[in-house]
Length: 615
Image 1 (cartoon, rainbow, N blue to C red):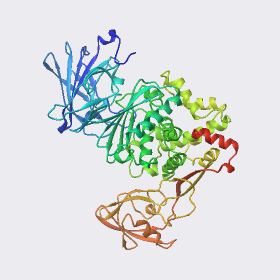
Image 2 (cartoon, rainbow, N blue to C red):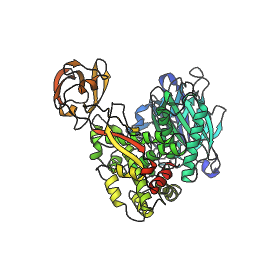
Image 3 (cartoon, one colour):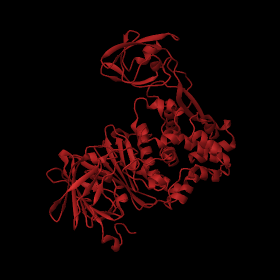
Image 4 (cartoon, one colour):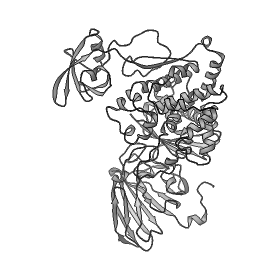
């Protein structure tokens, strides 16, 4: 169907929305909804409780400040039914509902508005007309009043029907599900345009930019997008949009059908004098790669229960390890395959993923299948005990994907791998829009391998034992070892360290400087802090009778005699307490990865490594 067109027979009956950032200073949008043929028994309306791709009940309706109905110029009573739905009194004729929505959530999930820009997801602002969700819709998007802000333009991947040069005007969507899948940015953003797989792409960057290397960013994004399109064999969109909010300290992304909403740190963007990609820029490119991969894996290849999701309540699946974990596996791998980073940089990123999993005892208590199922109440609602209780289906899911990749390569003498697995998912589920059932992935893996891989799935996906990482990496010609962390910022490295400069003792906690105290953020199971009775939130004053700072804590611990214990003074709430901590050796939980020398690898390992890295 051509861009911006729908059959005439459908357009005779539609839902009309209008959204205006009418008061940026108060962070208020006004949204008007017109229903031509409301339910004669009383039309119901509802606002979603969550947004696809972010699995937590967020209750967007709590931001509705006012709601009123009218018909023919007369008020219509709206009765609230529950926390996010209302019912209008029966009327004859078109029903208009107007609401004012508070927008002060600077994230990729909600809505935000001030005098510098406006951003929103449809799930935060557009009421669902219950029973008429399949009707096509139009949305008129207006700029703020000129006295509030000027010079604004608008960016969205929604199909335009009649818009001005700045992008404001009338847009259309085929139904409500698609309507709420188009994020919108308005303001004075900077745009970067590029082509990938003969499809136009844009990135809109909102926020202050410092000496941005626009050409490098354009080149790298084009390479990543082109790589993913080649990977799957085709690009199922006729345009794509990256909406990027640039802040001093932000990170996040949310996938949509033909766009994505991103947040990044200002310092993560490339500058002309950067040279080799910095850690921050690698992180940003990985984020772009991750959300773009979701264009296939999640937005089109998706669990059946999410395909049929009710946005008013939780929807459970044990498959998020595959949809987020496999995507997390490929997001950084694509960077090296596309030539945006070198092999050493990729191994450093992969080592960080391993370290993130090994740092938490939760990996031994919760499987990635269970983590997927419990995401609503555990992964998205993490507390100070999270590392001891849960595992990330992103990080461990990426390692499960690595293991499945190796298993398929070994089972088929390198004729098939996880790339082929994903392409089959695309052909069988993505292109046909058939939802993936809970056991379909295991069935497909067995078909490609030529035999059951049930032992793999039982151990890696449904089990909580340690992963056979050494075996997987050796199969790829990669050296692997775990060592103690040198400091809190040590998340692994590429290359094997020659010198052992690990600390002698470990606190077994994450901490930060907070004023004059060292505040404990997390206390790790089995560590010295927990053994001595310290808890998250405690504020350390002294170690061994000496005032402590975050910068000097490790040195104070290392100066203590091995095998002894040390007294720690700390405030818990407003009470000063004394604790005696055993001095524990640090745990080897930090990953190092390196290319094994060619002479130490078989021809099969070298071939497999080249194919894996795309070299």
